[in-house]
Length: 293
Image (cartoon, rainbow, N blue to C red; front, side, top):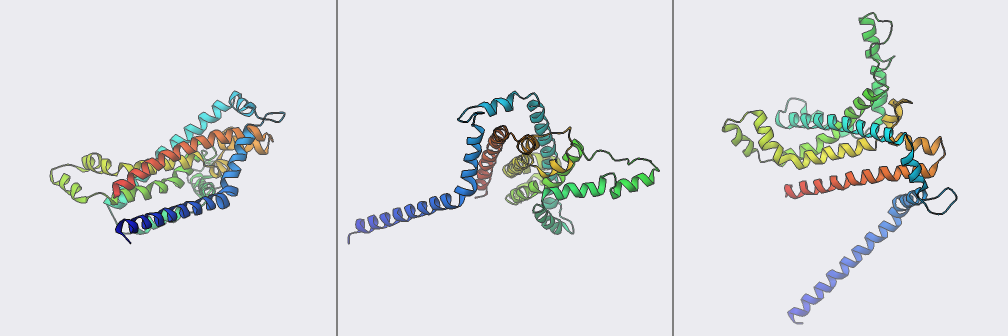
């Protein structure tokens, strides 16, 4: 057989394998993702577009956005997300820098613990803080006895302060791992060269480490924002009746008010916000992977 015949045969075989692989992916999408992801999301969108008398309409979205409490709920949600994610990201990057550039005895153990910590459900952190800082928590009781106070000296847990603290504690480890991975790609000879030229620690961090590691830091930060936006367990445990966020408002509309279309409209709005953050995260993560190569 001529050489061009062999090439054509290999090309046809490759095309068949690609078509077969595409068919397998489509089957997996239909069989697995269809009933578990695609159908529920489609039903959510359809429900949000259901009018009060059946049929399609934007009544649910109108009710959601015209509600005078919606602006306050969204504002509270954004404020908590920005406060929690910003502090958690800063703490996570600082901890990752300490573990990587200033290793100490037990640093490897702390790194493994942080990896294990992300497997815990978030509401356990909320309950742990209650056992420590609640009115009957061990630290609150100890401080009350120390200062001979008739009331617990700590009264911040069930509100914005407690939610931000719990989310910072829980989500800071999510920033540590991608930041450590980004630090590992840095050519340490550049760091040593900067130090030999007289650059102090701050200059090395700002002018050498940060420009090289920013994709990993940005990916971890965006992931932290995405996770805190979708947080529900901590909000349900530590939130109060006067502190309503978007996930809690959606939950209340569905289970208390039994207004499923309005709840679905709020969920679609939140889904759009989450998908936007996820798309940004994937873009930055892809750039980090390309830089690592």
